[in-house]
Image (cartoon, rainbow, N blue to C red; front, side):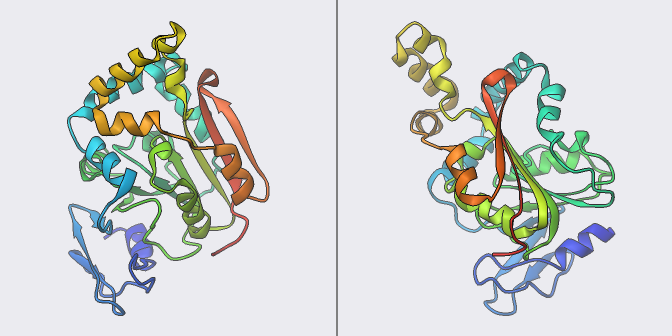
Amino acid sequence: MPPLATTILDRLKCIHCGGRMAGVTAAQATCPLCGAVYPIRNGVVEARGELGGRNRIAADFYNGPQFEKFRFWELAFLWYAGGPRRARLEILRHLPAIEGGCLLEVGIGSGDNVGLVSESMQVVGLDIAPRRLQQCRARYPDREMVLFLAEGERVPLEDDSVDAALCVGGFNFFSDPAAAIREMIRVVRPAGRIVVADELPDLYRYGWGHRLRIPALDRRLMRHWFGEAFASMILENDLDITRLATELFRDAEVYRIWRGYGYCLVGDSPQGSG
C-alpha cells in the first residue's frame, strides 16, 4: 500500500458514530466503537451508507445510462466555455501549489480534474457513484490516490486531514450543500483553500425554450434527456451560492466563470475543525 494510502487510512472517521476507524486491512476498515465495517474493494473504501433525497437520485443518475446523454451536453457546454481543459483550469488556478500537499476532491467522478492537478499534489477522491470511481481508478492506474464511495455531507476523514478541497460539478444537486461545505471546512487544515464550482443553479432558464418564451419546451427536453427525477431536481433548484459563502466563510469570493454561466466559490478554512 503506497504511503499516501497508509496516511489517509490512518485518519479514517466513522460516519455513524464519529469514532476513529481501526483494524484497517487491504479488505476493510472497522470501527471499534460501533462495529461499523467499511469494505475496501478494487482500491475504493466504501463508506457511503444508505442514500436518501437528492443524493439518491444523483447517484442513480451518474451511475446509470442517462449520464451518457448528460455527458454529451456537459462536454458541449465546456467547449462553449473555451474547451474542457481551459474551463477546468479556470477553477483549478485557485488551488494553492502545495508541494507534497493533499487534495480532497468531492465528486471526483471519473477523474477529469486529476490529470490537471500537479503531480506533487496527492489526491483523495470521493463520490457517491461507484461506476465513476472505478472509471477514475482505471484511468489513472499509476497515480497515488485513495478513493472513497461516500457522501460529501459525511466525509469519512478526521478533522484537519487535507490541505485543500475541491468540488467541480454536481454540487448543485447535493442533498445538503451547506453541510457539504461544512465538511470540507472541517477536514481541511487551518487556512487551507476550498474551491467549489458548478453551472448556475438556474442555467435551464437560458435554454431556447425560455428564449422563445416557451419554458415548457426546456422542461420537456430535460425530462427526455435526463429522466424525470433528475430533471425535476434541476427545475426545482433554489441554491444561493452567494448566501452560503457569506454564512460559512469569514471571507470568500464567488466568481462568475464559463462565460458567465457558472460560478466558482473560493474560500479559506476559517478554523481547523468543527
